[in-house]
Length: 79
Image (tube, rainbow, N blue to C red; front, side, top):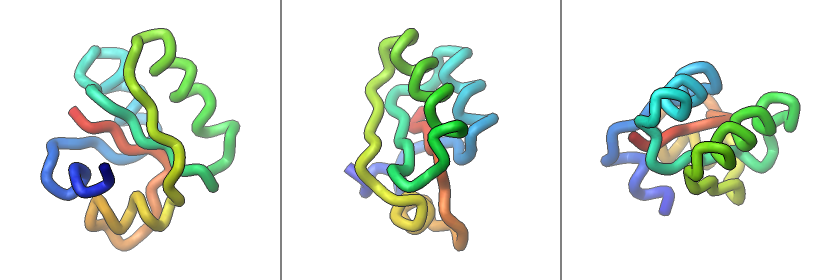
């Protein structure tokens, strides 16, 4: 599933991802399993309320690499 992050339109980061969820633009959200739960849990809750599927089995480094950025990513939303 991480391969879709390289080719799909996406937003990276907590603020942009929460905005995409709130606006109904997010189709799937990836949460890093090693990110601070204080950061990821509000995003996960927003996704539950909106009925958006969440994947949470990858690390920040794996998400960052899949998005082709040089740093880790705690939250990525596929649009």
